Image 1 (cartoon, rainbow, N blue to C red):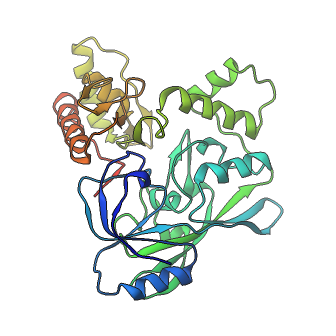
Image 2: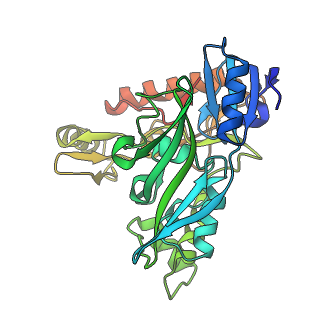
Amino acid sequence: MSVYQNYSLKKYNTFGIATVAKYFATFSSPGELEEVLKSKQNISSKMILGGGSNILFTKDYSGMILKNEIKGMNIIKEDNEYFYIKVGAGIKWHSFVMYCVNNNYGGVENLSLIPGNVGASPMQNIGAYGVEIKDVFFELEAFHLDEKKIQKFSAKDCEFGYRESVFKKKYKDQFAILNVTYRLKKDPAFNISYGAIADELKKMKVENLSIKSISDAIINIRTSKLPDPNIIGNAGSFFKNPIISSRQLQEIQKRELLTHELNFPFYKVDEENYKIPAGWLIEQCGWKGYRKGDAGCYDKQALVLVNYGNATGKEIYNLSEEIKISVKEKFGIELEREVNIL
């Protein structure tokens, strides 16, 4: 096992940003991780890298990047309702989803084609089309980088929120997630609550609903509006969908009526709060399809910022700042980035 110096990270982030790590190493087991940490104990800053699909490098990294390549996928137990599948953090998320779809294990089909690795799924509490990781999560094992010991986390321990967990803030850069155990249904409960799914299923002329048909529909939807990072650098949704109070919603609706824009979309979260599609807000501010140099806002989905070739991370970050300011000025809503900025 080797530790490399001044190592290019361009192929390890889906934005394709040309940046460099002072030190870089891979690990495929807890033992290898512990070994590399012991060999470079004097390096204070360390970061675990998975699929690189939710990060924007705005500068070179002066510490050590540790690339998680832990594999393995096994059913560890089952009961009358569920299969419990333990998955290595270094496995591609979509590969795991396809394994479940092909075996008719229910629960993650709505999360098809999300980029990244399994280890990032609980960190971000990834979600799409009415489903989040917390809905299928059972437990995970993580290695504490300083204490050099393995710790188990239950769903409660993870403190899942909207694209949040303890690993994003409270324990940021303190743990390496080794594996995640998911709880998949033997008798699937289909979730097609998002209208786009039902519309796509109709287009596909699906008569008998199944895990595979839902997965296929979502793959079709995502393919139609999201760029392939192998062709156009991106990290999927750049911003979170903002949640606003009922009072804020009423104020915006009044303003929209005055400007004759009556198609303002919103979704009820609870009695006091509503979710607004960030992509719609950005599009209303005129950013969809915008390009400056090689940094841009994708022409099919305004929520996605892209690198058309040689944009720097700083250029993409600056574009995101301009977008945030314009949405704040027009709607009074503060957008929050979903992508991690480094």
